[in-house]
Length: 382
Ligand code: PLP
Image 1 (cartoon, rainbow, N blue to C red):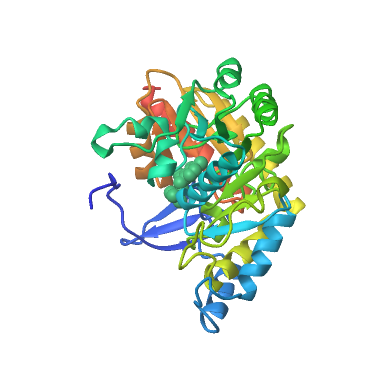
Image 2: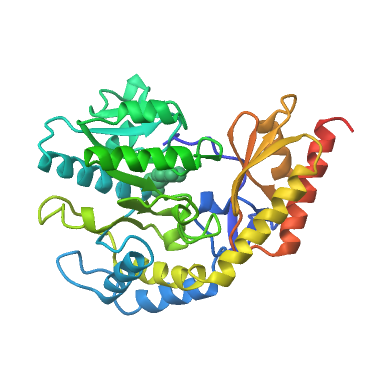
């Protein structure tokens, strides 16, 4: 269906940070399938894990145990909040699980009509629960009626958040750095206020780390670089290195909320996607790689800030939003960059979003920054 406006390019092959189209033309990919191919296209270790597992056992359903899923759950839990993990097939589905946990947890606290609080411009997905927590898209009346029990407060407005969280709050569900809306980090002050407000009323703090997680910001999880630890976190995108998998990971407070019958999925956490995710974690959960992400991110930021036409650079690690001078048409710039062989994304007017693979080479960072600088100069008529 025509749910996407696609660029006029057909890709046929990928390797590392490079893609080739059907005509054999090479592109440098600074979008990585929207932060999915974080260990690069066709990473040999991920390919081998998938190949090996696909030849041994591909599916049993969740009525049985399989080793890759158990190992993956253990690894996700021990590297984050220490509780239980529910596997899903996408980011939106991981958030559906988190919303279910929040509502059931609230009912146990005696709340009849639990409410989930998010920030304006948050993006949590397109299924009806996740959509209701995605204020901008939830305004689309043609898709209504929306699920009740969701409230949005202005972005990073600490006072408004404190005011919104009360006895009826099931959870605060937020992105620590908004991704889809253009790379906008929340302040530590607001994150601390969210933690405090949730603790005061017994609500759960849920971090959607679907875009920020898996090393993207230079730590395995973005929350590690904040003063706050959530009760639940959701992951997807880069988790499977290109294979579709999501996960809802709990801390101890939320680990036992869902019981048999409350939730499920036929495909989720299957052996092949789990084997892929284990291979990805083996690469990403490595202090040397995470340091490299921070260093390359700092280098890219500096190069971009030195370019004419760049107003600011937002974000952390290799999750960067480039704020452009107002006279520059970002959509046209994105098209021009594609023409010049560089793939970026334009999430809003005035912003380029850069999400290169975490395994990108320093020379590729230099090439991307030089391509952007040259395109900007041509746009500024210099
Ligand atoms: N949450 C965040 C922060 C996202 O960036 C996205 C996707 O862009 C989602 C949720 C939804 O993930 P999916 O498209 O896999 O359902």
